Image 1 (cartoon, rainbow, N blue to C red):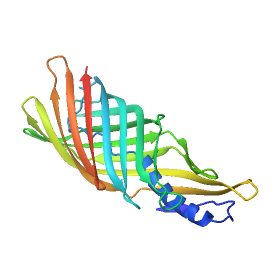
Image 2 (image 1 turned 90 degrees about the vertical axis):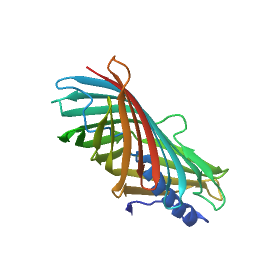
Image 3 (image 1 turned 90 degrees about the horizontal axis):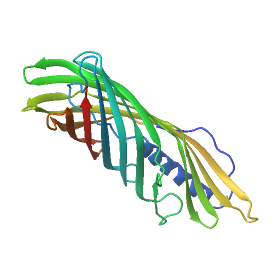
Length: 270
């Protein structure tokens, strides 16, 4: 849901078209700025009771987003650590960077398209959560996972021609991801999967700048808020030890809101 909460300036030819389309792309950009679902993992904690784990992860997602079915690619790389309260429950945290690109957007005049991205300066993010086993039945386990994340704000510019450009001011993004993983022990590893739910929130100021007849700058300013509807999906993954030195490999694929994603992670527990 989007709410327009402020507007100034305007009154020049074509401003209605520009601001209307700016509002549409603002909604899209906010959805994109909202991060993709996180790597979930199996029900079993990484860390032992009163122990620690440390690892590195890479997550990629690609999907088509409304209102105009733009194709979007998103990536993030992060360090992850966890602490085991018991042998079944742990707290975890992630810190890293996230970047995205929207292909062939059309925001100013019909037929004028441009890719928009983080342009080599991806925003940082921090997240924390809790996960663990709820029940175990022989080789089967059922667990739960909840994660909340914060992504730093940023500013981006789009120049459309010699007398018009747009300025996008992103506030920090907040997200929540919840999942219900079900796992089965297979050899030394575990195969797992289950449903997930994702929710995101952001706010964005969109400013369209145009030079008027006397070369004075005229502006349209919109402040927009997005509350992402809860998106549901599913995930499937595999975790296995790498040798006898305590390192583990985790591979995972997921689908959510008409898109797909994949992640790879390495970690070691103590």
